[in-house]
Length: 288
Length: 214
Image (cartoon, rainbow over all chains, first blue to last red; front, top):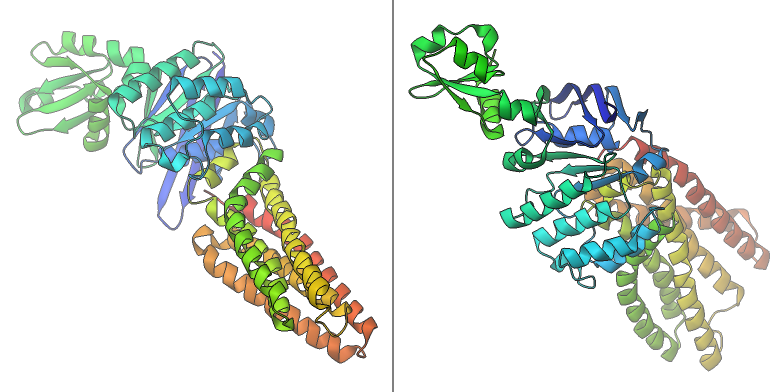
């Protein structure tokens, strides 16, 4: 399968903060939604910055639509829609003014489509953006990101300020967007329930290091957590474990094949695992 | 580029409207009174004031994530800087326009309050030159030092422009014999040198901006 986005061994060090993005590699196929999960400060925004060239990577390659994007490659950026968390646009603008500016920037800006999104999202076009609620500003940013017919949407914590109802509405918009088979979304979030709903692949990142990338099907059907007592834990084969976390009365063990683990360790309880739990096990637990 | 220019224009416009109201009231006052110093003040404040307004656009970009968002748009970083330089030039026309109308009306009602009409040329040249030097110093500093220090960079740029222009005027007065020719030569030197600085500042600002991370 061809990839719309491909990162190979991408590294970036910030000497002042001692933070290092360490050899990040993952890819996003055409027609897929990729979730990018990690705690605050894990390196999600830095990775997205490297992808979008707002941050200069130290090493590695990033290919968008099969090409490395340089500052001069405006044709690639024509095909990308971006939404950042928070205020994407100046507060003194109105949605109407935003459209007037974007019209002069994107060759494929579709004012009709933008107006449709404004109506669908109940955004008043003549109200100043600073008077919008947080949810409304995020909806406006999503409308703007979609209105130039992009192929790739990059969303950095775009749903984090929204209430569950609004988030659900936006997730439906994203699912509609990827109905076109050459459209993809990279969605960074620490709200793992959103990713469980829509992502095809989930990439976990912690302390600047990529922990793993897993398809959601794999996660739902194969990944599992074993609830072990101390004695059961000691009897486990380390090669079956991905990570474990000691709790008060049990040890949770993350395994990549729950059915195999159930067959092998008959007396151990094996549960389905959520993205949230995987994240906690990978970040707070010990990786094997 | 068209969109970037629109963006800058909209960003400058709301402050410029307020400043225009001030200039209008100040202009009425300056026309009503017969005072050469008031007219000198009006011309300088008008020309430099609109430029300061336009410079504030760069700072406002970073009040929201718009400054960072712009980098993800299909425009080159050089085009972003170029649009800011163009914006400066556009707003550099507003000051002389106000000043010209005020001086014209004042001449009409009270006659020319300057010793020689050629002095008006010097005054305009000085205002435009200070605005250009200020912009030429501000943008590289702004991109190098970061948006959070933009106020101090603006003050530094304005003071440096003031110092450069007055140092040049002193040098011209010492080197050239007094007379109309020296006044014209002085005005030409001020305008040419500030335009050169403005033009050289653009590639420097682009070079710095290309290295910046957001």
